[in-house]
Image (cartoon, rainbow, N blue to C red; front, side, top):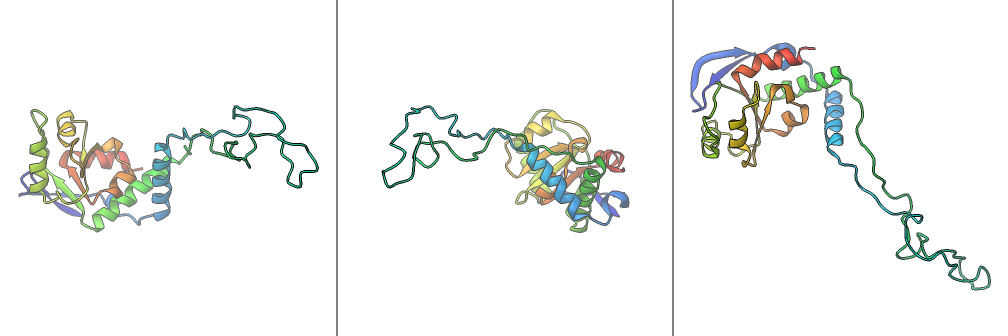
Length: 209
């Protein structure tokens, strides 16, 4: 699959790149995508939720009323879950939501997500660029030139670039990642995936499993 290379001004450079069919043209596997996105979102959960059960409540242990003869249910503690201010039954406890997912499944999910974007023609290959100093205004200008300012967009770099990252940090619809950190959720969450030319070979090297 051939894609035209454009520059940061949105103009064609007259060059094209060939996207590897083994990464951008496979038979998508929806279940692998589901599992990978599920793991990514699960790993983001803090798992610090907590509640107090009756053993954790501070209060008197005095028996509230006599056992028999009241005509109502027996009650032995004010900390019982049936009373207001009592403990919670089977409440949440701090826990980890992490679960294991095989590398090959994750790789399949990423390739499936990239294939979907390629089929939708949502992948733009842009000539490498950089900033001398962080300038949000320049990043906004690039997004306007590429006509992506109204969409969630993901810029994929070959390696970390602090100035590009800082230039996009305050822009709500633009996120920046590197080829080595690219994941399925980021790909699917973006309407447009802008791949810098030098990161194509990096993606092919990392994802060809």
